[in-house]
Length: 161
Image 1: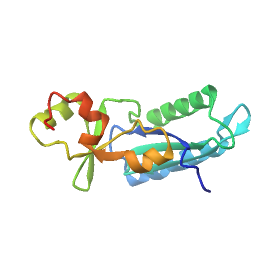
Image 2: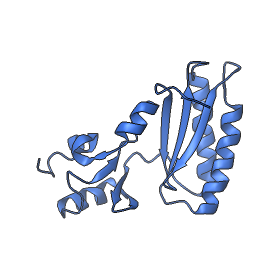
Image 3: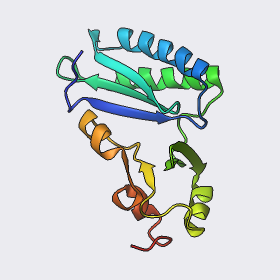
């Protein structure tokens, strides 16, 4: 199934790396949810994927039917159920993810800040911009160097250009 590059995207970052078993179970739940996801009784053209055993990504191609407030509420409630079921946090926006070699790590904001102060995270560190809005941005602006992300603005007093 082809999805438009303008398809809407929501990224939920897990507070921990998920095991292979958890990924399989969550993917089954996501697939079940997206096949039944509707907006005003119209089936949404939707899919979900899990990347790096950490990021749950919902994608809706709105060329068929647009996601409404109610349908977005359904997805949020569904994600909250996953949180409960798998004992994870998917809504902590200050749990920041970055790459260290091939490894994807995440830290609470204050620990992330400390890593910057120690020089372990710098302007070239790859960070994850979970605020991307569509499929094109997911592919091109999600994994970016710190210096090209919103992180630079948030931590501007700690990093040198």
